[in-house]
Length: 224
Image 1 (cartoon, rainbow, N blue to C red):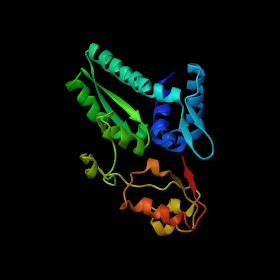
Image 2: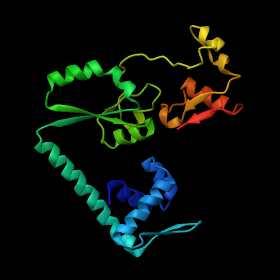
Image 3: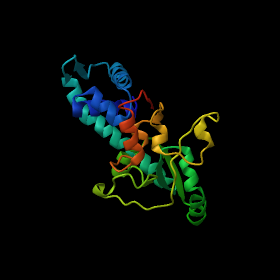
Image 4: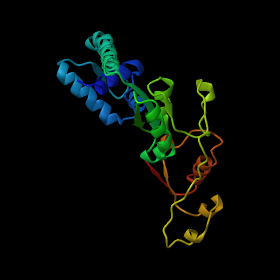
């Protein structure tokens, strides 16, 4: 029994959907199905019954629901107690890639010297997951862009610097000779781009809007 298995069961019980629960956990449906199967095997009783049309929580599942929540709460409390006992405090920072840490590496070095009892902890995941962790107070801050809508979530955006957008092309491509390229240069090309989860969500994001329009007329490749 592990925390992901317990969360899988709780989210399925809350939504009555394996698909919705998988999206909340940012895992695949087969993975969440395997979590439930392993949990039921360990407990020795079925917790969930499902067919093509609906998901039903068994009577044993209803009794286990509150226990599962209590187990997760006890785990979280135990983790906090251990951290407090160590005499250290963690600053939880979210980012989508290790490369983003270059933006704050010098700041963290100075911060560690001035606050030796505070240990930076880095959480690497996609923007959507990090936004959930930030609004749930699981992380203290995250690296993002001004394209992210944060005001309605009660969050503040503090600019650290400006970043450019880049297109990677073969060195033999005529575009490689240019110092800069425009959206029109990419109109007739097949694009490889990251999924929405890896891009800040905002209607005014010009790159995101271009990709959305481009993929309607081209056979683009979306990377997960």
